[in-house]
Length: 114
Image (cartoon, rainbow, N blue to C red; front, side, top):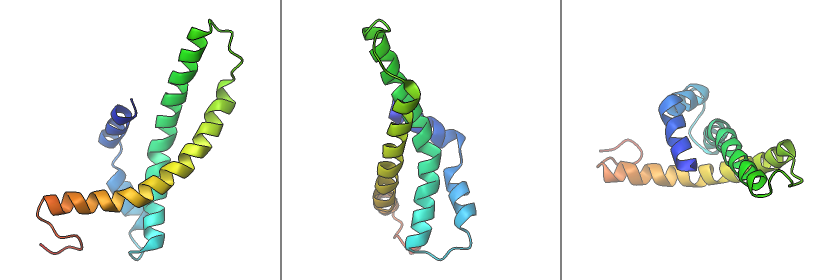
């Protein structure tokens, strides 16, 4: 479900253009990568977390016939806090690795050389 949601978001929201616009005047480096990761995290994580927590909540309530003592909002907010932190770290680490791999696979040297 997360993969499908992220693909849909990727088609709807021009994440590359948003991050480029936000970091246009920044020098390449740690700070720019942090901002890019944060923007991506803010776009993807809340939507995916909402969908996954909603799915879990609905399943628990169905299986318990509405008897489970769960409250959606605290469940969602605590999951969102954890997912935002973990998501930021994963995006920060894996996006450059993935981009280098894709560029090399297509015959482009990272850093702008062909």
